[in-house]
Structure formats: C-alpha cells, structure tokens
Image (cartoon, one colour):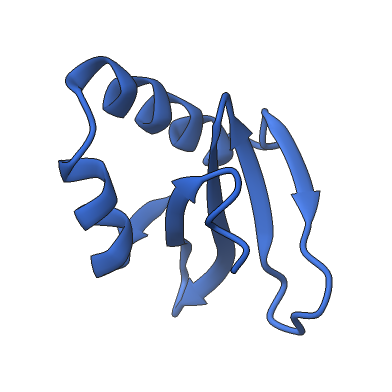
Length: 86
C-alpha cells in the first residue's frame, strides 16, 4: 500500500519534535495493515469515506483510494484535537 501525504499534513509534521513524528508515523503505518489498527472512527458529513485516527492529542484525517491496481492511503490532514475539525 502506498501512503500519500498532503502538503498541510507534511507542514504540520515538520513543526513537531522527532518523538511525536515517529509516534504519528507508526500509527499511520498501522492503517496500512489489513484490518487497520488504531482508534478509528468514520467522519460524518463527508461522502468520500474520510475517517479519523486518534493518536494521543493529535488527529489524522485520511481516506483510502485506488490508483489503478495499487491501493493508496491518502493522509488529508494532521492536527491538534481541537483545531483539526474546524
């Protein structure tokens, strides 16, 4: 499975310390497993199948897609618990 990050998610990760980035990336790697592991819930109000992954005080907004025969995990946004949903 290929993991693609949005510009906003990469920008957020660049501002965090290395320990936090490693924790978030490990949790994202868990999404590539079958079945995905982590605290996952579907997001309401979106028809594209977005879900959120809880990693401590951070939230990862993502969705799955297909690029031909390759399954792709799109990381839409990463942010703090209170700010990510605005």
